[in-house]
Image 1 (cartoon, helix red, strand yellow):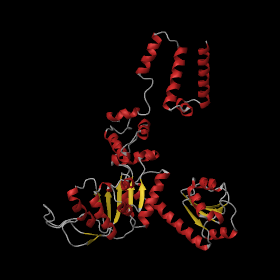
Image 2 (cartoon, rainbow, N blue to C red):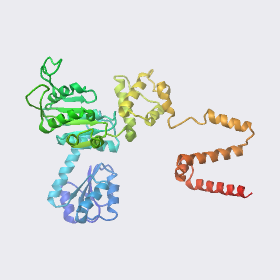
Image 3 (cartoon, one colour):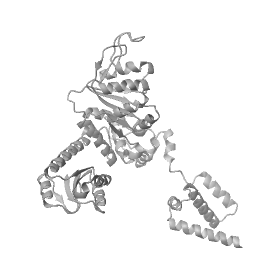
Image 4 (cartoon, one colour):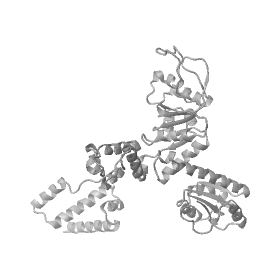
Length: 452
């Protein structure tokens, strides 16, 4: 649903022209459920940014239409930083057409985000994840630009690359060719990418097409492109710039048209600074760069991902249910391998399932159980009980036990938080004021004891 609002007083002709384009301006509250908001900003005042921030938090996108001083570069950047997806200066009827074009583009992107090809493969409902998918979909569907997908291993870079290929609008596109740059043998790297002629080297008994020829008319996906040797980077640069190449041992230039998608878990910008990756190649492959978040950064998506992987793993069997404790464990567990590790973990649980009942804690593999205690140690443990036993056996009473334990807890919490009273109080579950008063009382008692 598209709605409009006025952040300040707006001339009647502006309201009428927007109404003719199907945008009704609501002067006060925005209805719930709005996915696109058109906000008219006549002046950039003190409370304008706060209002834009409030409005943008309640919708998928907000388009700010600016008048007067709000149309300056500084004003536009301020609105973008406050949450606007785009800023359009008001110029009359041309602006109405501009707004309509942007809204239609955004609607098309949103329809694709909700399409099965996206929803069933790149699972997640978090706002940041959906915004990332929207950006990728826009470049995939409406441009032919190359993309660089950055992010840790296991975050889904190949799945995103496949989505880019699927949404590429070329009606006659061919296949997506995947090259894992970590597995290319240096001595055969040229042949892997460019192909070779018969007799080009020992064992070349006939001509062979390389990945670039196979990707002609389709998509070339270079996974872990940061692992390409520097000499091969120079050859790849020419192919990207000229769309021509030679087979190893050949003399004829071949033509290749393809969409390029690259991925790397390395920081390629830093590799450029270290001289490990060509800066000219980096800028060629990174027309658009998208960083895929780690699973730790999108923990809210874990339940949906778990359900997706459970459905995949069960095949035609009845739906698999999890005990709440198991579901909580899967949400809280650390995943250094990101989504790939989560999928592997869910598959192991399904493998150990017995009967139609729920998967319970006992079906978590033994080598996983240590993780059950991570961040939630069993307490009191045997060592604590032994310490109390020794104290009681030595004649220490409850009053002294309580006082000593509390003093130790405060001292340890302050040490863990580098002396921060505020952080230590949060760790101990008391107010900062209570901890300050306790410390003051402790100091007064110590002063009194010293004077005696």
